[in-house]
Amino acid sequence: MPREKVVRIWDEREVIYPPKRWRYLREKREKALRIMEKLAAFEPLLYGSVARGDVRRDSDVDIFIPYRVSGYLLELALEGLVSRRTIVMATPWHLIKGVIEIDEETTVTFPLIEPTDRELDFYRWGGAVDIVGTAGGRRVPGVNKKLILIVPTERGHIEREVVGRESEVAKILGVSIDIVTERVHVLTRRDSIGRTGIYINEEVPDWMSFEEALKVIADRDPNVRKKVRERGGI
Image (cartoon, rainbow, N blue to C red; front, side, top):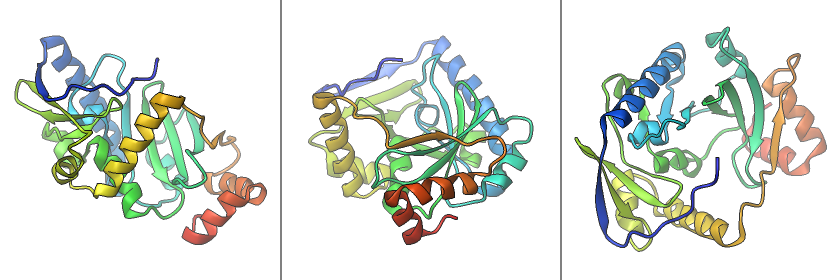
């Protein structure tokens, strides 16, 4: 799928959803809830467009566990549903994460090292809702990949420009101004120079646990080794 570009709308506009979009949202929410119920002991969060409501037919169902936990315990809870496992790290300065793929559109992501508050803010930035909110149909504000703040309404959502409203956006989302300015910088820079790739994206072999695979990576990569030593993870 082509990457979405940052757009400028200058003021704000309301988007009213047609019945088809409400159906997509209901179906993806139901799917997310089935997975989250299996992971209820781990305080799962639904994040991104399915948490906000501005879904399309091809929108992903993204679930995040907000603290370090054994990959084995998650896989045990998801028994029979795991199709692929990977370790990802966007840059040498970012969080190291395990990703469990359920199917082509559904993933469960969890930290393999202790996350910082700022790293957790990343998920609130995009919009994140817990299992109770998901079950109750709660939709939350968040920012999409075009740098547009999505504020849910009964009829759909309102879109607001983020650039120039950073403090307001931080307050609405309950995140630090630092994460807002960082994401504005990253996404606008990406538009000007293009995506530069991801630092680590490795599949975990069937015979290895996430933690064992992380040790293999850390043994050969000093950036990963330093991160693990600083924040634990093996």
